[in-house]
Image (cartoon, rainbow, N blue to C red; front, top):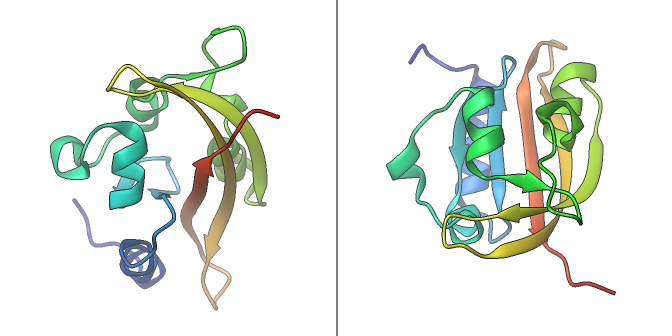
Length: 131
């Protein structure tokens, strides 16, 4: 994998120290990292998946709506942020690799350095309880 911009290296280091689940992608949507709290939700360790293209991760973790219909990648907050380079948020279900259906809320942020260079995006997410 090619060398990453400093902002993404620092984002990964920051994510690795958080207790909140975090998912980091480059400008093309390629998965660069997700942290241990995200592994618990997904049911799969990052060391088992490594980097993945958008088309792979957007279906592997099976995002779905309330009725169980698959969500297209362009409907996900992280993909919206990649497309528009602005924050996006939303909630949806995932069927993780343990067979659990989990409602998560996601806030995605663009990673833009001091030189205004766009380097990718990160998503912070958490389990949501039904009201």
